[in-house]
Length: 402
Image (cartoon, rainbow, N blue to C red; front, side, top):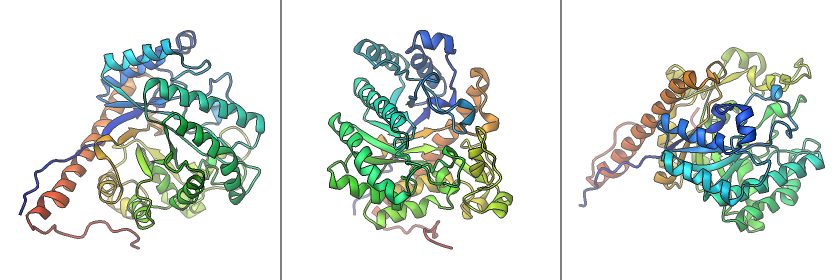
């Protein structure tokens, strides 16, 4: 008998820089575009973060969506109105070294299948700039959406994906990058009845898209940046999702995590069901998001009350089981997997550095301790005890159970 040592493996903890959009005042950052990245790396060090997910977006003067129509905040922390040249990259990398905080990947969250050809071309050109910036900064991946052509059905969008998005993946592959798809269905991208406006919204869709990618030899580029808040929004639970991927032979797809919860309003579900409010919304900026906010609200990890019944009903994220299930069911290099805290809890989205610091710091500390607890449980139950022939007690949460 060989006794296994107790060697828990922890994930890397980071934060998406959209959490504080105007950390650097706009008049300063527009004139000195890399100052915002420097300031965010310093702020992330104060948060005890291992890394940041560096938010890129079209500059407000170039964006096609007005700020008041956004529920999920975006930020152009990485300003790419002009391509990132060698001097700018060196300045950012010097700031990385000075802060001791790494860059996990670059996040650009936009509709890459937009139905307007001119707008799609603008977003595609910007995404290529993001790819080039990732290479210049030595980061391994870009995180974003696939999106949806609103003028076509979901099935027709598979053709659009093959014709328009696969070439983007080929560009990522040529640069040695992976593209990590965040699975939010983005109901707020339209005021009509469409709910799934990012076609890569659930495991069945990921597999269908990955099979298209495999035909074009970019399957190794297409990966998922999993966010459990969207599973809750769609009535799913994390353990069942991970089990499904393993059962289907796709446990390798998930390559990183957004750490953001969702707290479902049981009264809202009673009124509208999952899928949310689809009539009487109005058509003004922000009205489209009523489909989501009628039934739930985003959670910043650690800010919602511990509610075991909500976990069992898949109405809030059970963070401990999330981290256990990831280790038990996915094919992960745990020590090189990122947990990126994404702050979208509206009442706590203060945009003052001094006020936001203790909120984010507390949430990130909670996330780190949850991951450490899960890592210790996993090491004990799956390595140490089995090596000595000692049984593990109990059953635990089971997938597909109702």
